[in-house]
Length: 487
Image (cartoon, rainbow, N blue to C red):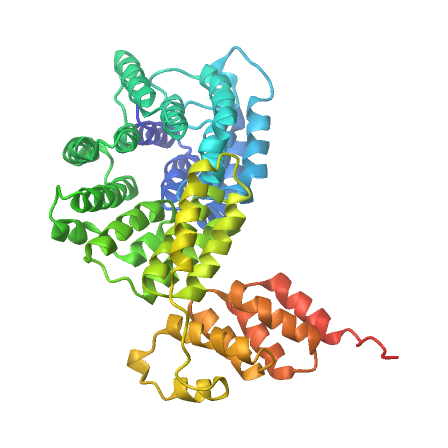
């Protein structure tokens, strides 16, 4: 039984019993999780829990755990969070699986949601290949809590297949999916869309891109139509489109599909921005389309990739951060954007220091770093002291903030104490979503010269643009602390 079938049936039964508020929550929370609406889940959860506790004697014991499941699920699923949510999901797992009980119906994890799912997703977000041992051990324990025909068990099967793929065993993943699908059908149920996506991923890792594309077509023509209309079907259809764009772009680069078809399949950047878990598929497709000359590689793509890699860094998704950062560096190097490329390399290096299995990433980093080092040196169009005036004369419609950043950085190398140049770096850094990089020299200057009000104001603007409340507090302390006495 798929999750959405279970949700519909359980919600209907609760409604027939007169438990309307609990029925609404059972249906609504997983829908919100599918769209990453963690804030809305937090807002709805207290009233849902109150209703469930009021009817606790008449509800299954796993009801409260089910309701609590979806907030973290939104974060590790749609939003792709890693270490930022690790303590929360591991705590929920200890609560749910801390005591053994032979009665499955009395277990804290119910038939539709197992606490191990969120932990497994979290581990995969942090460092999928580097966490395969942890995932294997957890799967061995978690899969004893259910069986074929239950949505939670089927989700664990998909998590097992994903683990095998990350462990460079896609052939075993396909066999596992085939075996478990047969067991599910023998139990009188059908596999859901996530099974199909796991097949697509395994085929892609086997470099069977045409087969993966055919599998996507079959999903769209068959399984998708069985998904309930509304959020579930919209989310599944969206994932199909992103996966198709990635496959078509690769096949076009291999000469097996028309480049125009691949370009038309690429979703808008804004859609990838709204759905963090799908960003890697978009970036993979975009890199291939740029190589084909089908997608313009400009500073706006740089802003998107910088924003996404910084998000991954902030939520502790270390491997995705490294991958996105290296893609950002490669594309920036291709358009001769040295400062952006250097910043991306530094971010990738930080991420690599936090993963356990980095050999493949280290090779990619060396290649990306070589591309960045080959970017031509910047030549100032005017003396460093006159650069800002020259830049102000440029027509607004032709301004390239990445080029301006490189020129400002080059001018600062000649005039490191020039506050106007430092402030200009902060301004262009905010435009390029590189406030963290721009803030480094700004902090150095303000700490040396805390009475420089213009520099302090520019740093404050950078910190506010980055929502860096801790940095703002540090800046206030820096500016209000008395200066050390001079002897």
